[in-house]
Every structure is written in C-alpha cells, then in structure tokens.
Length: 268
Image (cartoon, rainbow, N blue to C red; front, side, top):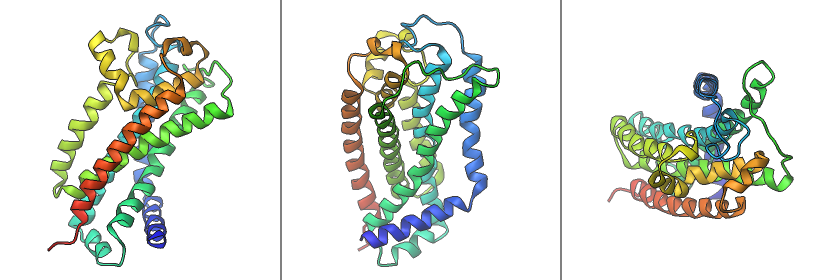
C-alpha cells in the first residue's frame, strides 16, 4: 500500500506543478485580502478588541493564515468530481491501488498548496511593512517550540478540511451540488471564527461559538506565538489549543474516511 500511496501522491503533485495558472490564481486571493481588506480596515482598535495584537493588520494577517488554509482546500473535492466525469477516477480505481491509497494520495498532495499559501500569507504580510504599507508586526521572539506550534496548527487545520472536502467530493456526483454543500460548511465556519473579525467586538453568544471553532483554535496558536501582548487575552496555552484542534481533526478525519470508504467501495 505504501508503494501505491507514494506513486499516486507523486502523480498528483506533478498534476499540480504542471498547472501554473491554477497556482497563480490561488495566490491572487490572499494577496487581495491583505492589500484591500487588511489595509482598508486597519483602523485603531483597543488591545482588548484585537486580543493584544499590536494593530489590526497584524491580527488580520495571523487570521488570514488560518483562513486560506481552509479556503484553498475547497477545490480538492471538485477536482475529484471532474476526474470522475472525465474517467480519470475510473481508470485509477481499475488499477491495483486500494481506496485508502487513492484517498490518501489526494489528501497529501492536495494539502501542500493550502499549507504553502498559509505561510506565504505570513511572509507577504511581513513584507508589506517594508514597502510603505501596514505590515505584520511580530512583537516577540518566536522560539523553536513556538515555530513548531505554528507549523502544527496550520498543517492540522489544512489536513482536516482537505480530508473533509475530499470525502464530500468522492461522495457527490455533480459539481453544482458539491459547491453548494461546501459553501454551506465553509462560510459558517469562517464567519463564526475569530480569524478576521476583532474578537472583542463579537457578541457574547458568538464569542462562545468562536471559542470552539477549529479555525479560531489554529489562529490563536499563531497569535500567541507572534504577539507578546496577546498572551493575557487567552485562557489556555498554545499546547492546549493544539490539543483541541487535534481532537477536531481526529473526529473530522474519521468522518471523512467513512464517507470516502463508502464512495470508493466496489460496486456490487
């Protein structure tokens, strides 16, 4: 199975590398968000509203890393549907490759781009501060453990939603239905998180929902490790938030595996 997984993952990575237009288009969204929304809404907020970040743009940039780690996984399931329509998935299923290796290869290859985009957002946000615009201000030294926590948060978040959207793609037949379903999941998840909004301005009921949101858990890990003033605004340490995020990931991954296994099971 490992040989099959490696071969299929390499093939999926080559497909991504041979489509530079799609890569360029995926880079456009985070750039526009940082330049238009981040710069346009970089208003003075009290520290309480932005959880101790030095300014709103820095708060926004950390949230954007979590935001793109989710949104960049949306098209993974759509690619599965188009591959089914064009016969690619049927040919792959006719090989000795197991359903687990087919699902796993698409998950591993498809997660590379969201993870890369999330770190690109942080790098670009910091770079903007050197060209006369508001930029990401890191107000504390990021320790090796802190860097590892940031990487873990982004990787877990990307893999979690990539597995879910892939499983939905394997389960559905029409791209229109797929986009309707994933938007019904994606938008509420992002809009009920503390990724982009000043968390201190959220009503109490929404703060409660946001505190359990997996996107919030991931970006809180990032913010605590980037901003020295943010630590006192969080109830738990980054390690505890990572445990909560891992719990979400395990539950969502198991649900995705069940969906994908049913969809990839041989017809009787």
